[in-house]
Length: 131
Image (cartoon, rainbow, N blue to C red; front, side, top):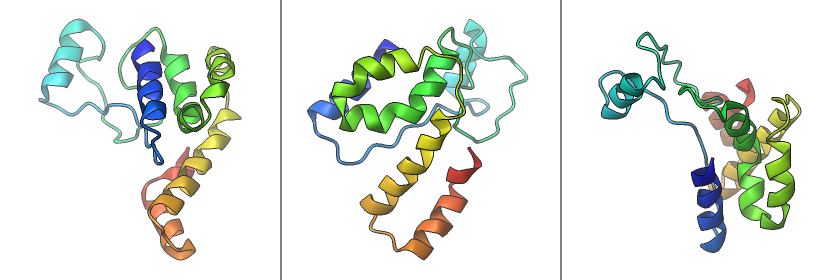
């Protein structure tokens, strides 16, 4: 969790104008996957869904990481909100936080200069609205 906040800090320092965040997705036979299975962070019969909305690896910070995914771009853009975000991510998993995910989609539309039709096609393809 500390590394996630360090990543937010770095993005803020370099004044990132675009931030995309996702959880690592384990794939069979990757060193990361083998390591995670050996250390007990991932079961041997894990299912690779290809989705990134929740951590695939076992962690005592599951709730915090899942909630932080929703707040990450806001934390980078508005670092003064970090103390509040650090409190909010400790609350139970909150479906209201998921409403922030379409903001990420709008940010990508702006960054990649997509027209509305192309943007909607892209967002549907990228499963932005599945969350």
